View 1 (cartoon, one colour):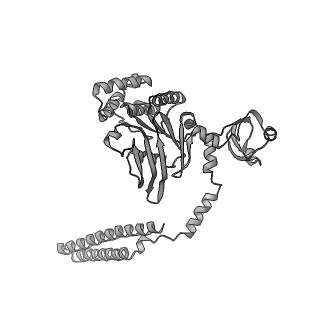
View 2 (tube, one colour):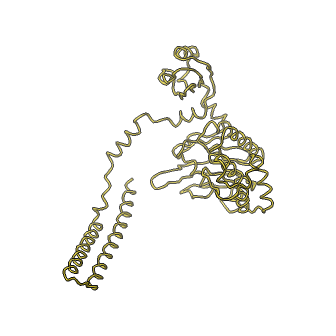
View 3 (tube, rainbow, N blue to C red):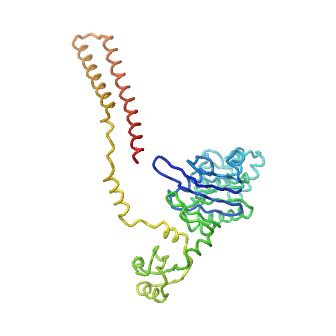
Length: 390
């Protein structure tokens, strides 16, 4: 299935989650939708699946708008767990298969075949809540592809999987690709995307910041990148004059050099302070490319901007100072005083006046109802005013 989107935009209140995103996903390829947490990947996926509607933009599937037929041609593995915890594993698989129109006997056969691939046959009659998180993820994956979809959307598919099962899952992704499926692989783990994806779309803060084939992207950013492994404290690397960007870990680092510099000079500067085990020029990783494109805010810079915004912001008016709310509040106070007068009168006469009690209760009830109504109206008015000023 070919999927083509143009200028997708989605805003939630004052937050623009997706801003002018255009994508083309083709069969027989793994399309990586990557970026940090909160970048807008899941919102984009939910629009592709017609779970939420875009505020603007278009989405076409083989040149057609979304329809029930297209829904049945899509397999979706969500990031969140969506299994019935008290149900049996095979029963759960068969239930979801029935929603896709698969006959019971066929669903059972396919379900057992896939459970066998993941070495879960012995768990077929166990409750899903008895499975580990990784095995639950395998069951969700089986559910998402059992109906043989032509478009498969995988949102953080390696969640909960150990390294061995990640390899098993990667092999299955490659099989799906060979079968001509269009696969969308959404993740913030850029190392996994680099190993699996044919094409990449990198999103940050709702916008596309990089797209293309992996080869094209790496050629664009050149080979002015260095990978080293060492023993010692490598924090000083970031401050070297020839270093443009450095991602430093416990015992290795990825370094982007600032222009052309002789390798002997770099080697001398590093070897004088570190015990080097590996020194290799290499293509930049997706992780280093992303850091170069998106950038990392300087310490304190973002906080300073927030402080300036707070300082210049107009203070929000207090709800209690709204004229209608104030009048309604005074009415409640008057009703409370009247009720107090009723109680004092009854105690003084030592005889219940039911008419007076009913009047007092009615006055108090009406006053409270009016206060709550005016308060709700004022809250709505203030939200509208504040929204228009942002």
